[in-house]
Each structure stands twice: as C-alpha cells, then as structure tokens.
Length: 102
Image (tube, rainbow, N blue to C red; front, side, top):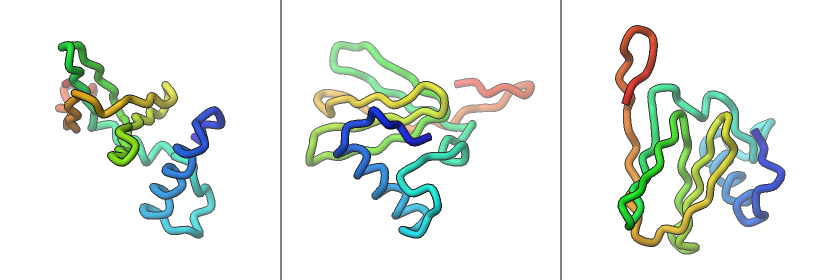
C-alpha cells in the first residue's frame, strides 16, 4: 500500500517509518505491506467529546511536533487526526472460534 493521495509531509514520515523498520535499501520504501497490519491488533481512539473510533489491523504513526497522528489500515486507507484532546490505545484482540474479537 502506497497511498498516492497522502499529503507530501506524511509520505516522508511513512518513508521514515519503513527506513527504521526495514532499512533504507528496502525494495518498497515508503510502502506498507500486509505484514505491517497485525490481525491480532486494533487501535482505539477516544475523542474529547466522548465519540470514538476503532480500527482493526491498523498502524499508527504519531508526529507530536505537528500535533497530528495518522492511522493506516490495510483495506480502508489512511486517516489523519489532530492530537488535540484524544487518547490512543493499542489493543490486542482475543481469538474465539477462528475470529478476532475486541
């Protein structure tokens, strides 16, 4: 997955992420693959107004200096959020009868 509509500065952060994880010589630098989205994990975001979002098999990159975070998903693209008044939790999913549950 290499999101072409991702803002330029976020493309640079994605390249930095793959450089740190796989090295600068990584064949698919700046791209994510299925192995970057563990089936047994989820991201829970709680917003200041009480609403929330849950993303299964997602990867979060936070950039505090921009006061932003991006959630990358394997099948649903990416989502950029401001880091104002939110809580982020990485969740481990329990497996039951071959399916993953929160």
